[in-house]
Length: 134
Image (cartoon, rainbow, N blue to C red; front, top):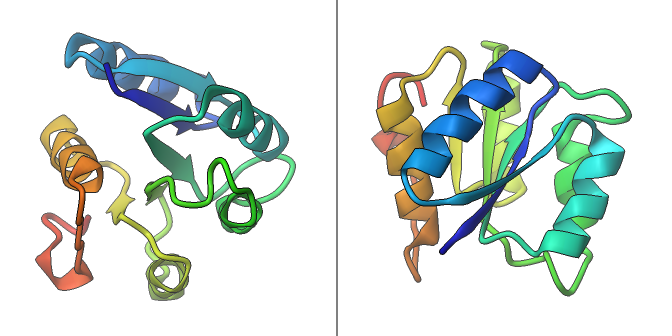
């Protein structure tokens, strides 16, 4: 069973999508802030990280930078998620090697597609191929 670390400070959203992901067969761990996210990634060694950009304790980009330096989590695909419509966020995520980029609100199917793509051995997400602003 594949493991997902969902880093989201909105407890209701984390719970709702956590339940959905579990029903799809994933093991889900949730972190609500940047510090916990790094610790959980180190401890749980997830297969994919869903990473909100706006977080308490540091933004998602800081988390991604820290994880990229960790041998155990450095190659873990990261799917960035955000409610912001700022184009520079997508560009920064791409530069950090994002497996995908989703703008809230997003459909559960868009999330599922992004996760499945990230789990593929040679995932090659391209921003121009993303659906519905994802």
